[in-house]
Each structure stands twice: as structure tokens, then as C-alpha cells.
Length: 170
Image 1 (cartoon, rainbow, N blue to C red):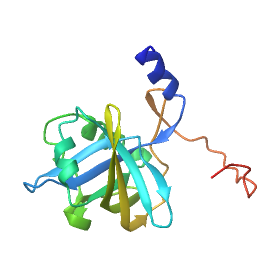
Image 2 (tube, rainbow, N blue to C red):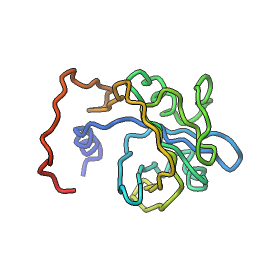
Image 3 (spheres, rainbow, N blue to C red):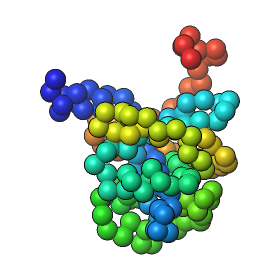
Image 4 (cartoon, one colour):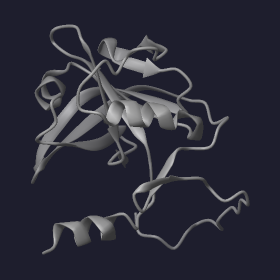
């Protein structure tokens, strides 16, 4: 299988962009840009994301007592780029407060999900993290930051509500 072609095919699925944050055992703040976030369960409230096994922060994330998912707004593209870099001072000039287990909550995010570790699973070249949401908040005043075909995108300006129930399998 051609890995590049596979990645291009995966890029056909539009995703939101989040920054996963935590406090490392040494007290340092961790932050990673992520598009692999999604919901798992409402009862109990579970979410998941995955981290590349080569990520510098992987060990610290596996040891974290809690973490937060910060859903970025369209006006936070610069933060997505900042936290996508492997090293450097990611937290310089980033306004935030501390949430569950001192996980940073980025100011201006569309939503925060504060989580306790629930499970970790092998995901090939990634490690899958499942978190139990202990607290959440939503501030839907902005448009989401959307990633599609390897680039940031904007939503179309026209809205349509689907007819419920959708004929989907849940």
C-alpha cells in the first residue's frame, strides 16, 4: 500500500482541529495539535484521540493524571500551527487557565473537555487514548477550525438542519 496515497485518501474526511493538553510529571505543560479527536460514548462520557508513537510528548501523555481537549475556532489557526511543532516554547503568549489535574484550557477555544484517563490501546504507529470526561464547557460563538485535504478550510455560510432522525447507524 502506498502510504502517501493512503494519507491523501484519509484527507477526504474533513475534521475539526483540537489541541490536547496536560501537565507532565515534571510540572511542564504539554500541548499537541490533533485532528484525530472524536466522541465514543455518552454514558459514560468518553472521548478518544490518538498520538503518533514518535511524538516527543507521548511518554508524558501516557503518564498524565488528566488531560484536556481544546476545540479550536477558525481564528485560532496560529495556535494549531504552534502546537503542531515538535519542540520549542509552545506556551509563550498562549492565554490559558488550568483545568482538571492542571491540564491547560486554552482561552477562546470553542469547547473544552477535561478528562481523566480511561484506557489506552495499541493503534499501530499510534497510541489511542480514551478519556472519561469529568467536566466540559462550550462557547460556540465562533466557527470551528476545519482541516480538509491537507489545508485549513472555512465552513460554507449557508446552514441547513438535517431532518431527524437521520437514517444513520449509531
